[in-house]
Image 1 (tube, one colour):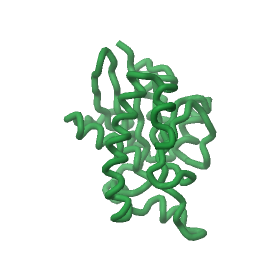
Image 2: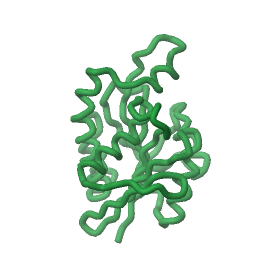
Image 3: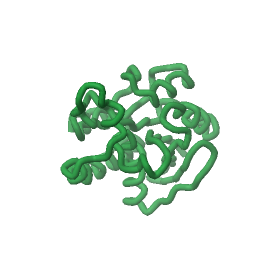
Image 4: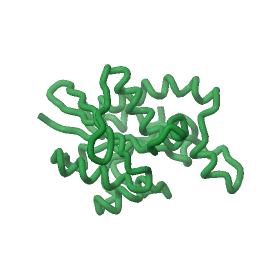
Length: 188
């Protein structure tokens, strides 16, 4: 049975639940809710398992805080013997307009501390990532407040549809592969 590790990046703690920086957690929670799954607290995070058409998808929400996400990713890849091409990292991206989706097979960390940690521990920039645009609608010097700020009411409305689309992307990644998923969903 082929295994996949889908990692939603975020920060633990109730003060972060509805922040832009926690879109990775929010996407995994929406997927789990849609499929009637629950998360179990395990070493370095919370995990849920989903089986579909001969594949096992492990959903991981690291509890290491964003800056140490690589520790959880590396641990679970090794523990479950999952190749980097079967790992999908879901993260927020300031460089994309709100709700824009960009799936890539490799790339820089783009200044994102979670990706920086993953790249350091995996010793590569070549692993699939799913970037979810949160836009850069903040005043100079306000980036941290914006990223750790909560969604606006307008964003929350649009988010419902984007979360549903994100669940489709997770399934597509496991069933159709990275290239087909990129072709089908990039820019949507």
